[in-house]
Picture 1 (cartoon, rainbow, N blue to C red):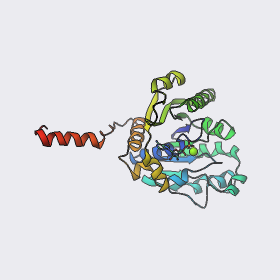
Picture 2 (cartoon, helix red, strand yellow):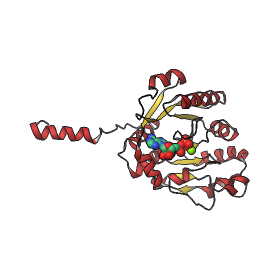
Picture 3 (cartoon, rainbow, N blue to C red):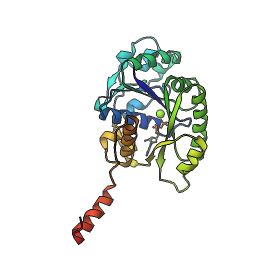
Length: 259
Ligand code: ADP
Ligand code: MG
């Protein structure tokens, strides 16, 4: 029996899917048996960024009662197991979200860590994903609309009995008007587990259908996600200093013979 985390946000487009996919791969790289479920059945896109699109059997078929969940499990990068939701509109029409609960129970039997990529909003599909995870990782970007929606999600999750572990503040450092971590923590009253900087490598990797943690493992977003993965499983991981800093050190050593 594993441990499950729902990755939710309230607001759409804040990075839930990117974080779920890459966190799953990072945890697998640390040797964990990880399953990622794309529970955003209407706006599925996890399969696109992890390079597993176009699979024959998907969650849609399972939720239509036409396939077994074990037939919708695929091996992704670093051996992470992935259940794609399916991106076809036809598949979506026949899917019954009420069957999701049963899917979650079955997946938990066969994995150490289950990550559930939740839809945005607080409609029934999102509520099912939030209630279905033992723990919640709350994703937001450092702006007021995202914070406001994150707060609503946190309150709903607590009422549903899901353990809200903390927040992941994504896309930091690009705007001077960004909220500070202290402001975010004051409002949400939960710890910030990690901040993930704005990083062009994220979008670039998505375009190639590859997780950023495997395509650009040294990029700032990858390092932050690896650190989060390490913290979740109690492994020590230090984010290496940026290249420029190392370069300056080397330059100073070369010029002055300092070590
Ligand atoms: P959600 O699942 O919450 O709707 P996505 O994971 O699909 O959000 O991300 C939305 C967009 O933001 C994508 O285009 C993704 O590439 C981009 N993105 C997410 N995180 C970052 C980041 N740290 N730096 C740059 N772009 C990001
Ligand atoms: Mg998404």
